[in-house]
Amino acid sequence: MPDPTCDGHVHTSLCLHAAGSMEEYVQAALAKGLRRLVFLEHFEAGVNAPRRTWLTADDFAVYRREGERLRQRYAGRIEIGLGVEVGYNPRQVDTTLAFLREQAWDRVGISCHFLEIAGRHYNLLSRNEKTLAVFGNYGVARALAEYFSLLAEAVESLPATVLCHLDAALRHHPEVGPALAAQSQSPVFERIFKAMAVNGMALEINTSGFAHRRRQPYPGPELLARAAAYQLPLEIGSDAHAPPEVGRYFNQV
Image (cartoon, rainbow, N blue to C red):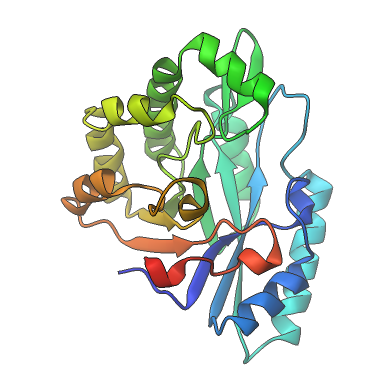
């Protein structure tokens, strides 16, 4: 079972689509009675998108320095982990591996936020109407199938510790429910879970799902049941993008 005293997935203003400083997240975690907090800031490589939603090399240096300062300041009160959420780009595997070799991380999460369509990358987790229209024209079922295939490649090729928000792609698209239900029995999940088991990778129970879809985290119960056959370790994360979201919905897990 996941440890409800540890929030293993939070973001800060460093990623440009979240709010709050690192210290504000630490204080929020203390107020929730958590014993451990893991920052999981975004890394992307080779993404052609109009808006940056990940950290630069300079940002990561700031992230490291501030994280070490907070570890010293809050030592004995809360354990602070510095991690990275690696967005998978099949054209940038070597670049991603080189980044991960540069320094050690307390947690390496795998995700896939961008799908390349006609030479441009579109954010699979966006609520932007124009982006959602692109996926509608492309085909929601098609986009989901490609997304899960990319995740399978990612868990097979990247050294990571946890797979993040497995079925959160296109969560804001009105057609995602039926498309996801149709995908739920796909053999691609056996490929994903088998590779995770071989590599000792945990599956994240991402509680942001309670805010985006009714009474369910990511992944939903059908995929959790399939994952259970592989006895994967479970980690819980709020995917907080603001300090008040730290530890959200943990009591419902």
